[in-house]
Image 1 (cartoon, rainbow, N blue to C red):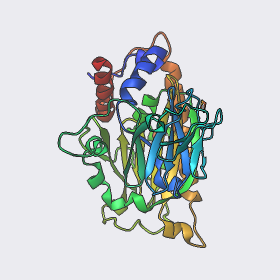
Image 2 (image 1 turned 180 degrees about the vertical axis):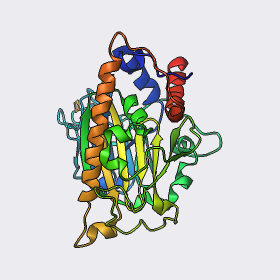
Image 3 (image 1 turned 180 degrees about the horizontal axis):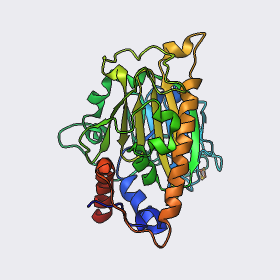
Length: 365
Ligand code: FES
Ligand SMILES: [Fe+2]
């Protein structure tokens, strides 16, 4: 019988640090959305472990991910989580100044033989998938022998699979950031099963049947599937009513379901008939995860004078909080000395498949 993972996978600070290195610094991670930084000079920062990265839009419109570390004496350049640079990044310590693509432009008081070309900001990998920005914070980004872009290789068939939602066209409707006292993997596991839905989500349970998931074969890169609606339900909202047009491009089947995919390591993608929800997971400790939840809508809908998104926002905020609460209870129980791996049911195959990916990473170090 398949069982859950041992205690150390969730409750050991040393294990957590090693896992972060293997899982998050060895993969592309979803940093956010391109529409958060539409204009040249716009930026946001993300932190993970000891690293901080600035994701900025350059003068030409290109996106850059730069390590937030001054090349003079190492100072963190930018403390804010989002904002706008006039046209350059200046260190607050001694005014070394960088272009938005990381080139060093000015370094006061350096000797005449000092070459600015030798001291650009360290660059992280930065690529875009359909409006979603991914960064690569490791230093050993693999080259792809077949000429594919590296992010593309990690995403496998996902771009084709989700092309119909045209995520690139959508715009942020609402963002909530949660601080959850649970290991990031418990969030992924909980996302991938609805056996808990009748117990924990009375509102959601009125919209989906908890055994109604139609899952695809799990891979090392993702797992997920689709869930249809109960009779009369058209989307996930406080009352199951759909107050927005279907997203353009969706076929008949896609209008009648929500597609839920966990894309490792940190993106939970929930594709609805009339909007898209993303959760990005930001591990902070073995027992703590920051979660950025965003709902993205078609700009035509957002621009309508009678635009409404509160039905979806309120529904998912309440459902999220129910999930975070039980994830925190799981974390607390697993930390006990008497916890031991427990048996999975046959309905928890996706969870086991994720555990296997986690276990393989743990063994590979
Ligand atoms: S540490 Fe940045 S300018 Fe000196
Ligand atoms: Fe849930």
